[in-house]
Image (cartoon, rainbow, N blue to C red; front, side, top):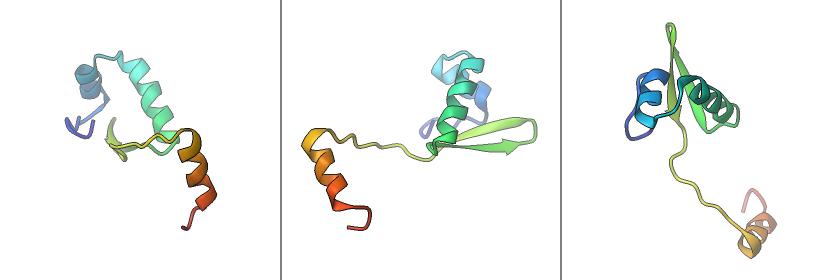
Length: 72
């Protein structure tokens, strides 16, 4: 999404190969969790990726990050 910058959900469905109904549910779910913004343009919706990189912490590394607290 961030690379192709689809103009609407139909274009993203074509790029991704997903059925547009399933894709719409996925996009709305990710939007509700803050990963994607949906920009309304008349009768269409344009998905915008808010994050493109993720870091997954597991085990001790996650424990260390949680102990640091949010403002350290």
